[in-house]
Length: 406
Image: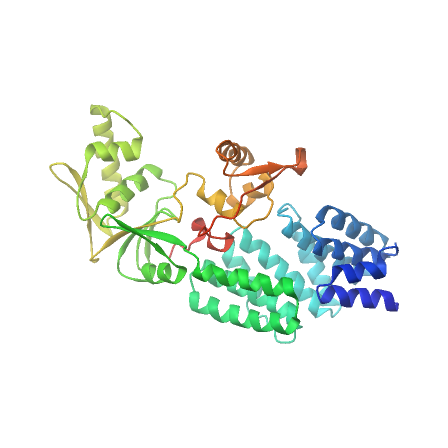
């Protein structure tokens, strides 16, 4: 490897893409193409970066397996940064395996970290945790060590383990300081804000207040009966009754939880559950049926009793009932939470992350765009969606829909 290639690689490692380009901008040999691609990615030119890396991978000879694998890892990281979740995960796994087999432990660790970050983005916490289980980051250089600790912190934050998250972020901050890369330091600082940003709202006895992530963790570990509108679960301690697939039952549970310890009129419950402006006998009959179903579902946690006016929630082995709601009550709150990371997303990537159909996501985006809550740019397959940063709104690490179910 010649001196210019070495110097360009060192510049990239210290977060100086312009310095790297000065050395290899006019060269078209495979190593130079790869370094130019990485430099363009660091500058945010993802389309050009992807093209350069593909050219480099094709230009490397078949026996240069390690170089090809490094290009694949770089492509995968660019795809992640561009929120292109269609990048083949198997290709990244194969590249990491190749790097491990050839003793390139640093780049193999980087590939593993890219895998984990992608899994975190789409909410596969257990798989992400397995990827990092037993992995020792000690031998890694400071920049990779910081990236590893950021991934560990991301898992801890989404798992509501704030103590572990703080410890991982402290280690990430120390490693980022040693690496002396401003962009990495800024990423650690941004991740740390997740612990001081409102993650949910507590609704109880007619009052409402914001909760930090640590407050949410403490609440879900307590004996309080929680109607969790972030995950559509009714829970107490380690016991949870999921109602995400039963929207009518959850709407009834939330209405009863918000009113507790008072009862709720039948008219109000019909309006909450069935969205009916005028209740008739058929609505009242249906309400009795749905209340019976809800009583059967949550029977281990609470009873639902009929009153003269309507129905009331009676917790079992709990002294309090609260509703845990997202920071912003919005029909498309989960979609907005993804967009709130400030990145440009395609509708297909959002569909993958949300586990929904592309058409459903497209309709939601069009509705949000009509009210000015999101904006789009580009055309065709290059169409992307963004949202301005909203103070106090959770980042993708705090997505309400990704809170653990217990």
